[in-house]
Image (cartoon, rainbow, N blue to C red; front, side, top):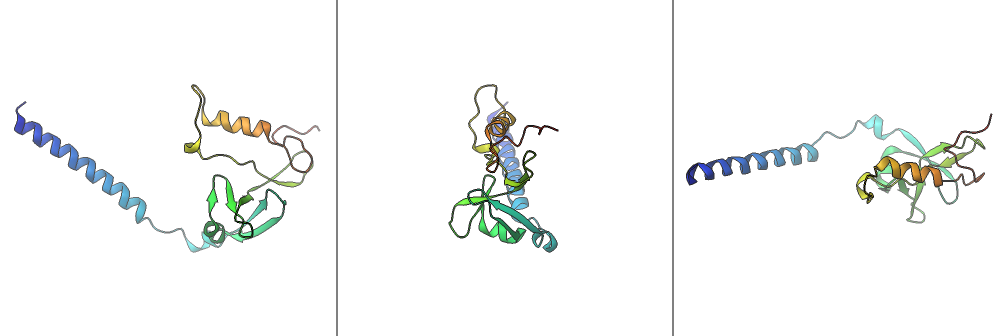
Length: 139
């Protein structure tokens, strides 16, 4: 292959990569916003420190901001609001454990993100009855 042909193929590949990258960027930047009814949907969250339940619209929760699986508490500035789950042992509403984002975890060799989540669930205890809510309650 002569030099001229090599340069042409290289320029073609570079321009192809640039077009694909620009397309992905524009697709992400200019996607349509979610419908209004979806942002007006009311969601309940529970404060993981005080166990207070608060109801706000999806739009308000998005404005407050989110870190991993916690939303920001406007009173304290800490990320303490979590989605609600029901403890099978005591029947009370409790916060879900704080799961890390998939890209933020350093995995050991041969370990998957589901292994990390299973370990978090095995160590988590209900703040009301101190039992693991991920094990089955006795009948």
